Figure 1 (cartoon, each protein chain N blue to C red):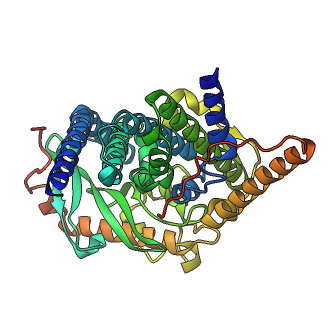
Figure 2 (cartoon, helix red, strand yellow):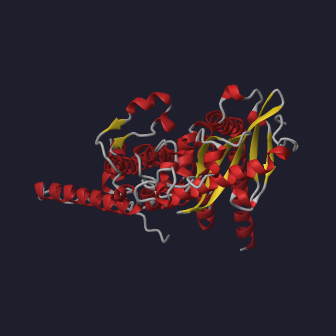
Figure 3 (tube, one colour):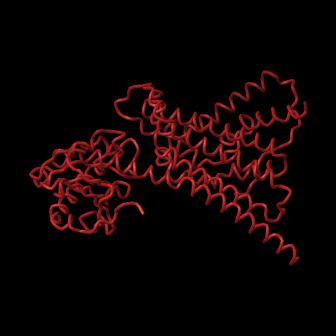
Length: 210
Length: 234
């Protein structure tokens, strides 16, 4: 009996080691490529919301960690900073719209130093397919409406969906989702305008690859 | 000759008679959840196929060394290892599909079709047959996924192969077909209830075809074949 248990335990351990080795090996082989893919995804998003010719630094390598109730939740967010000749140009801040129809909507909002919106993209969401998912660029151009909106528009009471008397379209059958996004963009811009002088002085946490 | 017969039988079982999706009704959770487009369905189908072939081959290769009492944990270990590898590979090479499949990629581990084949067939048969069985079962499952994905995508969005370039590379952008122009999307088809209804229709169609075939040749007696049906308490 004891011998049988010992034998089985040994066999099981051997298989566990072998399987872990295979997974470890695959991880080692794909690690670089996965990181590269994630980096590329980040770069193309940043490129889409902050024009390349506006700044001369590598945004993906210059970022700071931020945390503020205006950014939707008590979670660490990342702000990627754009500078030209060392002068602040814009910041792309990841943020959360906490009141989506189906939980949190993760966004990245780029704000220029003059307070205007440079661009917005949806990073992750669980909104209803076919209704609320029009906040994705793949489904609709709606999210591009934010690009180029000025500080005055941001502060006016028309910064809302049309149903609330504002200037942004809502979707047929889905008002909650765009409302949440519109509000989150406004809050993020407000956060940036309040803190923009200090943001660019914080220590860079992205830096060069180790 | 006998071997040929066996391969034929395995193919027939996997693709039609004992199809994991339509007859065994295994792995319904990913089947219903990710089939909102053909591209997603194909991505999950191929991932499942790959895991099924690899796990069947491995389980068959080690069948002499595995004591009966601990076979299930070992099968689970092997399957989980292969799923993790496939997940890492898809993360590295098909990033877009990896993102849209989300949690359902690691959930392949819990697909009963895979451990079912390991237990019912691969653990008792030589490597070649076991791999072939995995291949056929995998193709059967992937085919159901793709058909379901196509039905829902055409009805829901009016397109076919939307987003196929995420899986197959840039050239696949030309595959996208606008079948119907819809002013607004047909929500029922995209949401989970649509998946259940479409799945029910598919099973009904399969049963109708089987009934018809049975009526056309009533004189042929049912051959006595080894049942490879899974009786798993999962």
